[in-house]
Length: 323
Image (cartoon, rainbow, N blue to C red; front, side, top):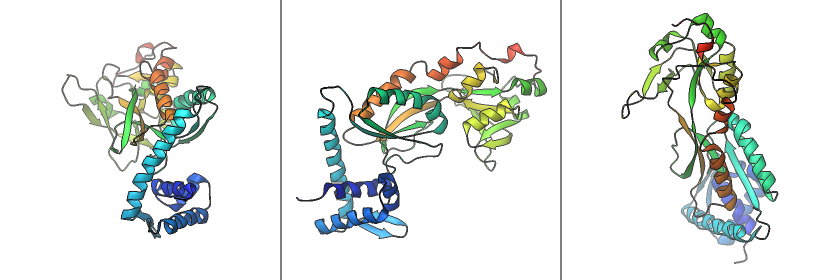
């Protein structure tokens, strides 16, 4: 079995990244070099592993079986490395590739992650921040952060924290337009919505009685944005009412740039999860980082602590009319 193991790793990366181009970018090598490695592996095995086409690659039956076997082998190798590396110093050795949403990653994940990296100087990090959906498995990520519902059954998940959402507007908007006294009153207001104007936006609220379905209303979206920080800034500018995660709204609420509306009728909360590929072995680095995230976020998340540093900012402190 005199095979070049780097060729096998190259093949695994091609499969998990969905093609030669993406894998070459991930590994920072040329496409021709990566393609040559896979071709050499096929020649050594005397079997075709991939069907190549202009659209990408597809696994042959033999290629699928080989991938599944070697994926498990790599997992066991990682386990062996974890068992012995850093044994005397207690350090975690290896690398982490993480994907997370932009705002959450910048404001809250990043500081905690960088402190974690300082504690483990033998650990390498690659952090990709993007609000778009990222395929954790095909992207070759060790760990991802997801906010909201989980749809990918191929991933393992661990709850990090609840993500409370709040209804907010600027004091100036409240003075000029009044504020809603009920959920139904929101329909009469300009709203700042997430997503495209081609889709009717709706907001969902906690049911009044346990066991009932959540209440939801279709809102009138004057402004449509695809970024939470932009929505917050539009609300601060007085363009309307916004439904925001507390981790985005907290600093503006604390600084009295926004006020919270209808606190007695809360929006349904999201959940923040750590997700990772469903393999037989989860690396020591991934397990340690998830434990760190849960310990810091699970009970009173930092954005809730941040909001408590100032006085609660509600409509009671300003003269507004109802609408």
